[in-house]
Length: 120
Image 1 (tube, rainbow, N blue to C red):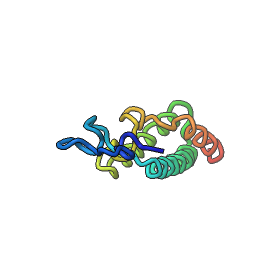
Image 2 (image 1 turned 45 degrees about the horizontal axis):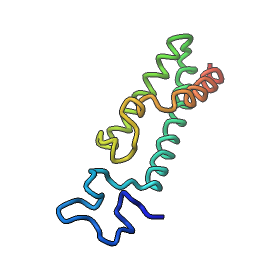
Image 3 (image 1 turned 180 degrees about the horizontal axis):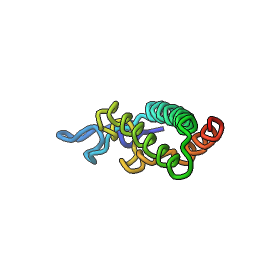
């Protein structure tokens, strides 16, 4: 398959004075690296849901206190991930900043509730 973004398969090649992407200003996206990054972030967030559920249960938090605990820890982990990426999200993911911060809330929330009730 020819990759139109990389200009592969075009016999003439990129025009002089333009970049290798055909002058559109788009960068080349490595699907394998993106998949690896997504899996790593998913693993970290899943573990965060379990640990924050254990913390909320051990501390005896109930109701909205437990929900606030989950949201604060989820945002803390997301910001820590961004700090690890030097706040350059576009180099690692195609998500917007808001989408990155609220990603996986439902999935992590289920793990959180399971371990929250287990450790309460």
